[in-house]
Length: 73
Image (tube, rainbow, N blue to C red; front, top):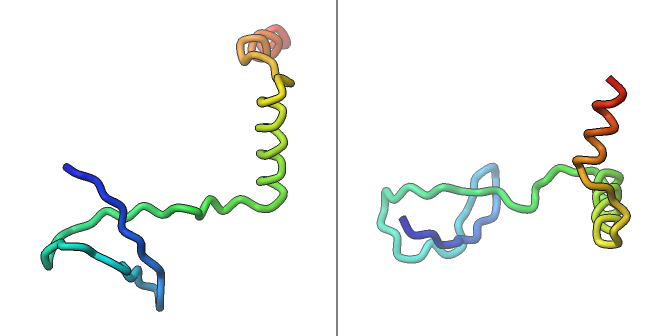
């Protein structure tokens, strides 16, 4: 199975493909939604801050975090 990307927009509740290429009538296409992560501005800011911490080395290994949690049980 080959994979290519087609661009579509939604109009009136239907996805309209802008340039379908050479696919014959009846061809089934799988559509993936991109850019619709439904994150709030606050959630996006927290994610960005976490990624900045990761880049700056201000994180702890998961094994250390889990060991501390396990010790509290």
